[in-house]
Image 1 (cartoon, one colour):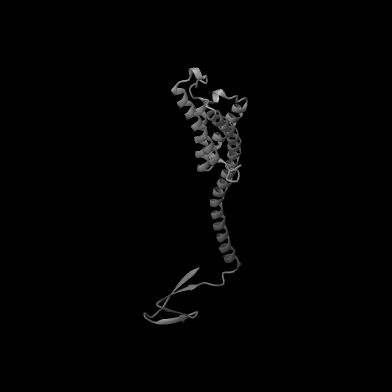
Image 2 (cartoon, rainbow, N blue to C red):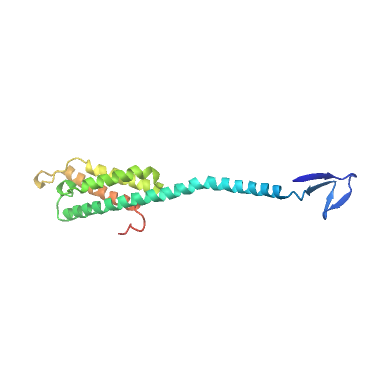
Amino acid sequence: MLTQAVATVPDTVRVVDTIRVVDTVWVVQSGRGLVGTVAEWATIIVGVAAVVALFLPILERFRERASVDTAVSVDAYAVRRVVRVWVSSLEGVARGGGLPSLQGLYLGEATDEVEERLQRAVTSAPHASPRVARSIREAYGLYYRVMTASHVETDVAKRTPADQANAAAELADLRACVARLTEAIDPALRDK
């Protein structure tokens, strides 16, 4: 606590506790005892606790985001493995002169697993980091654009130029889906 001491004669200089002051002296009152010291430390502790309480939710949000990113990464990795097989199969069909369309491939139960994992990842996306959320949403959109595309005629005799354009667009969308899924995957797993 500070107390004010005023000099009785203006423009005089006094020496108080080896401090030279003109007219007004602010002196730190000493000897407050245990109660004053405890009050000071309690104030410091409450201040530090308030600062920690402000930062704990921020740290918790980072931990939650990292956890969600990992979960989305796992789903994106599994989906990417399946979609890459589809893309490589369609590229093989195209190299052989055929029409690269998913309708000409046997997909089996893989579509159900892919849809389930993509839906789970997109549902978690609002809680993920912005990069992962954007990537998984874009991959989801590309996948469903391919799966809901118009029918492509796979019979060579009935094929039209529009069928060829649709099949090429389907393959391009699947490649873009693989690229978006790769962006959503944890960097340690991207090259695998």
